[in-house]
Length: 141
Ligand SMILES: [Zn+2]
Image (cartoon, rainbow, N blue to C red; front, side, top):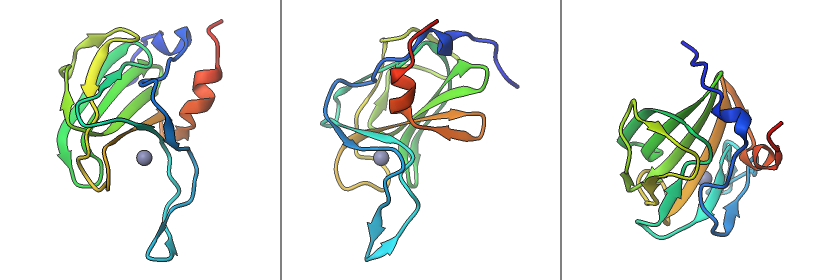
């Protein structure tokens, strides 16, 4: 089911204002072998550092302990546009909750398969992955 929230049309802001340490589409290597490209944007942060909603929406998923992505939160911004936040240590919101752009939603962590704490933010439009840094450049109409 697709929600008719229009939050995505009001523009996005970065979920953290810390340094970006990983960009969308970069190839990663494990033990000399190329693995799947990275489909998120990584922001520096210590465990517990704030994560803010890049746009308003409804919280549709919170799982504290997924194998690869650790604490994983998903926000529906409407018409198939979703944000996913990975490796979180904590969520400050509940599934089904309405949240506004800029609201504190979660805390950075190092849960899942990561070496160091950071925030990994991803955007999907239905099944299509989108570079969040491109979305940040879009201005509301
Ligand atoms: Zn990442």
